[in-house]
Image (cartoon, rainbow, N blue to C red):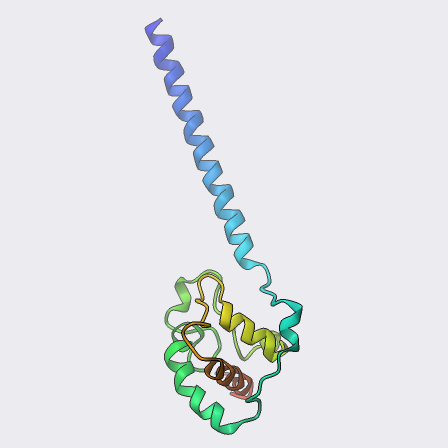
Length: 148
């Protein structure tokens, strides 16, 4: 009788271990999958126009702001290869890429404002003008030649 109880406890522990282990695997996989899905701004964000588009002074003001605040993850040249990028999931966007450059200014402004884990939302950190300056600066990054 006592041996049967000990055997049953061993089986129960093994079953519990496998349930917990596989449950954790499923949760990890689903979380990673959710992080890899496309990040899409609401349609109404596309209607927002950058009041500083093409403003050279705004771009100059934004460069230092970008390097100090965006550079650690996105890299100084915006390629998503900053020193903090390796440990992030999802990986930081490559601001020089066609996919980022093809987004509307309003969409980029919304993403910068709202954020998404691991990127913080900057709505309460930067003024509207600073965020629009950053968008104007991001537009210049596509013109930087790629490293050889």
